[in-house]
Image 1: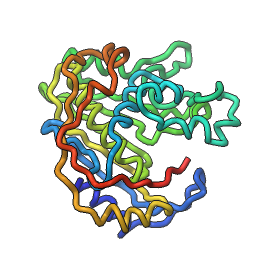
Image 2: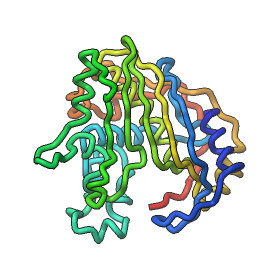
Image 3: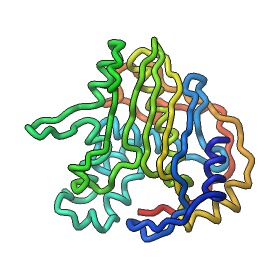
Image 4: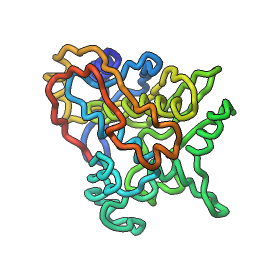
Length: 283
């Protein structure tokens, strides 16, 4: 919580106003933020200065792991996060690659599980990383990237959190995640949960101990219609201690994550929080 609040205060104090062409709004912006999450100590990085809907964040991650490309599939596992970008984004609604209602196109998990090869076929990046790590292999390229410029026109949104780089030292697994753009009041809450859980899950299914998850953000910003709520409400609240995350120990393989896992397989203990804050969302 302290590093989250420090980043929010830094944006308020040092940020520069930038016009965002996609949303038509201004953002108070800083460049470069580095966060760390102690997965080894199970210090689950839930926001405590407002209520965090953590199950939706984990559900979204599970959808990425499964390679979902449809907002209805995300809703079915417990998150509405792709409804707006799939169905309210004017540019995407008029895109000839859109297949119909709820279609997201070739974004995020689609790239992670089925990156198209020029000669035909696809690359399952996640499967390669899991198989290597289960064998104790770190080839310095245990990377899953969602950032495919050749197919940006075939999806509703460029990825914000775009690359996950796993590293194995002995029997301890680490993760470095890269994010090009972050809506700090809304998106970072989801992003930091997903970075933490991704490392925890990958360590569990590959038979390693989780270490630290490193989270690098390039462009961190607060939208102009979020600023008053951040300054006058969230930053005025005292944080509570970090809760802990319990993951069903029966989750042992990638196939488990692809098939039977639900949000009932995740529990949070000791979560104290202030009331929710309804920050505006920009499509």
